[in-house]
Length: 279
Image (cartoon, rainbow, N blue to C red; front, side):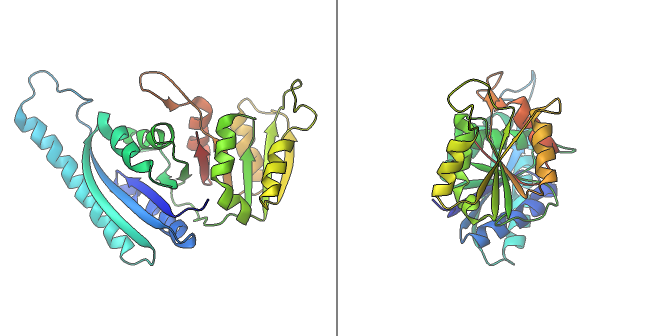
């Protein structure tokens, strides 16, 4: 597998250029086509209109979303015209409750989604929804890039978070093109189970699988020395100078069909390097 179709969804001009810079470099480095969806979001209502709303109010909200979409499209087009990668832009408008449907319909035809960090100051709720829709509804791997972060086309050192889950295995398989290019891949196992078939060799089966694909791999087994597993993972990545983290994305049902679980959310809130996820 290789990354030949890369996609990014932009919903805010403030975060557009930083995301485009990293998506463009990645697409160019992997000789991929970059598709951009400039999405204007009507944030005024959640699938229904408040009592007494008139057609004027509805039209005003949609017009504002259209203006935002066109503004994002102009920013993206101006930036990408200066680049050497192959690209295409589509502009559209959506109400907040329909963002997931529109994103998923396009993301499922991409090898990789490159999206901005969904949490932080002035980050709209639709940015989290875009990540969720790509992972859970479309089944596409997602590379979440930090704002103003260094563009990593082919990371030298990668940490793979391994807990024997199906999600973690899917993430490792989806990231295989990057793992094969890396100088070193560290399979990180935190507090391995004391019982079970792999208790004597935690991470061994995954490491063997990766090595047969030509990945240069080592296993790190450490204890949970901090309250959150995500804190331990981030500290390990920092100590080993990892340039990317590969991990399974976990979700659970609440008001939406799928939402990011606590461990995944905390990783995306705190990580200062790209995080490659799959579900």
